[in-house]
Length: 78
Length: 284
Image 1 (cartoon, rainbow over the protein chains, first blue to last red):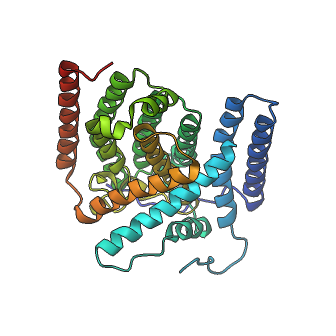
Image 2 (image 1 turned 60 degrees about the horizontal axis):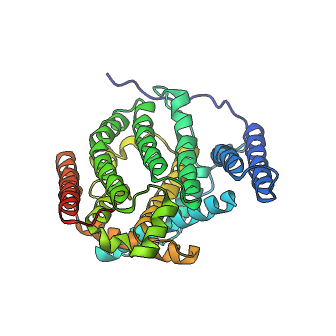
Image 3 (image 1 turned 120 degrees about the horizontal axis):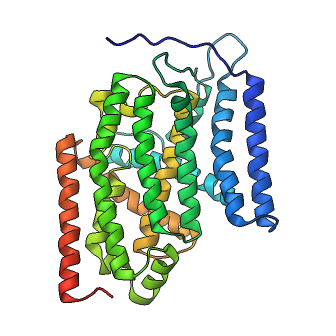
């Protein structure tokens, strides 16, 4: 028997998601700058970016979808 | 600089997906979507409601999305630094695991079908092994820098080792959207392993898959044609993708059995070629 899927409660607030996105972006930029200027090894900078960048992407998308207002979601069409 | 290249690769990958769809549509005498459609998809999904199905394994359902982006960002770094093809092969295997996990994580029957088909289509890894082994036998190295240097001295592997390039081509073809080998996302199982991932998670997946498409195409161009400036790499990868668009437009989706049979046929071609080269010369 297939169980019916239901909405779950929102656990992450817009503020939390925005903070996570901002922090991850900051880490990515810092790691890139430090690697570029030779303060840390290139592979280490890349490793940090590879871990932090996906977190930035997901956090940003979660922050964008977290609407605090009623109404329809903005539609991006043709 | 890796951050810049990741962003450029994502932009290129999303644009490539849009061009791919456009070329397929024009071949099928449809107007098709605009080439920036995939950017719109990502933006649209980012603004959509996002929730996790009750039947899902929550941690896996969420974690699989950043994992897809991370592994292909890692593969891009390996490619840019001229690292080992074995690591790219490892990333390809990890991608298979993410495809499988993606389907199983939601608890949806469609997702599970996609996940099971992902295991079936693991036959595509065997041409990849054959292809990588062939490259090693010919060039004597699996480091991308060494392979590029070999081509500078001996000519493009695309010409001197065409069957091996063909095997790699089939592997990449099996991973582009609307591929005849794309059995894990066939329409009879809705969107297959991606069915239940939407909203923010689908936006992340689209970005990860765009990165994957660009990296795989760039690996092919680098390994079989050689090193080139970034703009020329973009042009070469686009031309390569458009040849695949023709195949995708003109070939119906294969059944899982036929997809696996063709991939095994490719392995046999590569094995016969390598045996021929070993007997009649050509191997270092």
